[in-house]
Length: 226
Length: 339
Image (cartoon, rainbow over all chains, first blue to last red; front, side, top):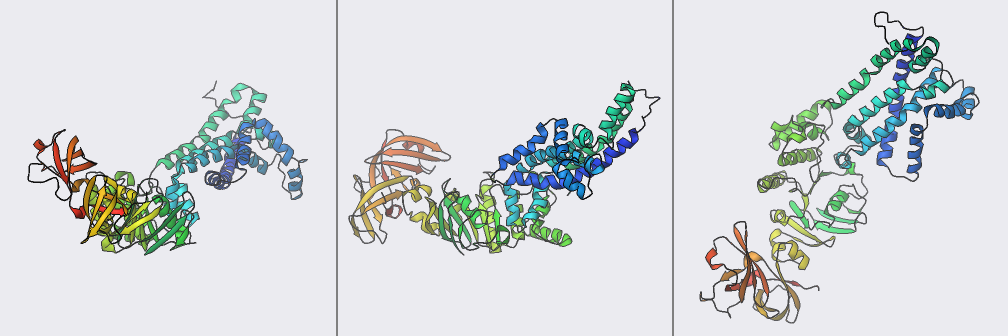
């Protein structure tokens, strides 16, 4: 168990914490910016092929992360179709920072979209219609009514996505083993130094992961913040 | 203002009516009244004037749905300020409007801390903030407490008259129509009748309109003779005299409508004779207290539904008793019988 007096980090632990937090903080806005309109669109529009899109969205949730990582590697890896094209543009999507963020976005975004979609579906259509009759444009209605009434669910979705992004292991292991984030570093510690070397980093992980979901929950429940 | 709208979806509806002052469109549930309002507001696809082709945000209307549709995440004044622009002018503008409607004291409350009547006022203030030229109210009585309903509505109608904004309210409640400046009846998803409440209540166009207006005694009959503005009609074996509308002529098949409260009962001994005008010998079959009044079902040559005021001596009311039912000729309404 943890030796609290002689708590020492293994080499690379602090670097991995930095990598995890900074890259997750980059991935989260990407997830929000891409996922929010997608979730709203899925909640409010009916179109042909919607079930296909639903299935595509569920696929990353259902696929074991390791297998999903392998699929992504075959697409974005140095020999994959997209990887070859991007490589020509100088963007390498294996074992780089962009690869790490990409892995997090793929792993965490479906959780956000599924939650956010349910949140938007819970917003009474009537209130959006009323806002239109009060002279607001559709984008204003989205910002001033839909987004605000869905805020509890959106915050829950973001909290889920944050936790998923920070904890992403399977996909990262395949396409972004380097730079090490906390989950990979935990694995490396376990392999190299045994079980005891895992705990200090695990405590640090909890400490870093906890504040954002707590804060999101608190802020979204407070009334009159807008 | 002339409204002329045609909808194909979700219901096929045709509505053409004049809105002047506080106008009520009454119709049974399922007539598509809400759909009509939404179409005028631009929220449902429809053809018609005015505003055809404009998106909802460009139509100068104020729409109050059932339950009022206040934004739950905004305080009362923020709801009213919703359509207003300008960071600082918004609050002043909203408070001025709320002052005018006597609800400035509610400004800081959230909608869930307001009564039905207060929510209605806030929603009205919000609709007015948009500067509409037509106000649309969907079932304005539905979210009100029955005890204060009439008072709250009376004030609402007075307020709307003071502002001078043409208003179309739809309802299944004909009592609301009775308080209006103008009314229209919707039957079979079209407007069958419009005019002042007095005109419409006194001359239902057909059987369904009469039923909607609260007439319970509806018979088929035929006209025997017309003379001196009076028509002699026969409802089966019951011979009645009615005030004759202009269109009526001898031999015509007509519908006859009599309100329950327009029928009086008298003991046969009171010097009232069986062959007096519009007198029918009946036997009382059911007597039920209805609030402070008595609902009496009586059978003679035809069955009558009678509502007696509470000043009736209850002692004279007894199941099995015989009496004479009477009604004034001006209270016997004739309509063209479509059946």
